[in-house]
Amino acid sequence: MSLLLLIGVIAPAATTTADAKTNNIKVTYVLKKNKKQIAKKTVTLKKNATVMTGVKKGWKVTEKGGFISAIDGKKQNNKKKIYWTFTVNGKQVNVAANKKKLKNKDKVTFTLSKYNG
Image 1 (cartoon, rainbow, N blue to C red):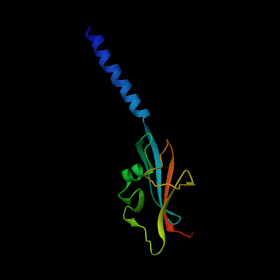
Image 2: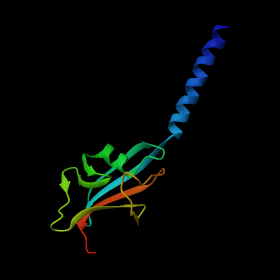
Image 3: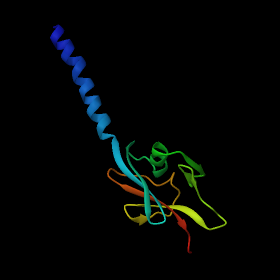
Image 4: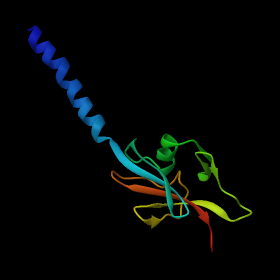
């Protein structure tokens, strides 16, 4: 009888651990200044996490309304038209970092460079 109770306690715990693992994703973040890579980290996030959640997990971030103005002390310069932009899997994203949801194995690249538009 004790053995059955012990198995009943251990089995649900193992299932919960497996479920927790499947609710996580791994995302790689790369920071660039112009074309030079200055940092790279892979972070573990919950499913449907946003770009903002991951970048904040990896670095100190200054943002307002989902738009990033500084990462790890490297700031935008509005007068010189130098801004942080980001891509996900090589594609430019046209929404704020707190709106763009991520999938497992996504690669997010933040680039601090002059805007030529």
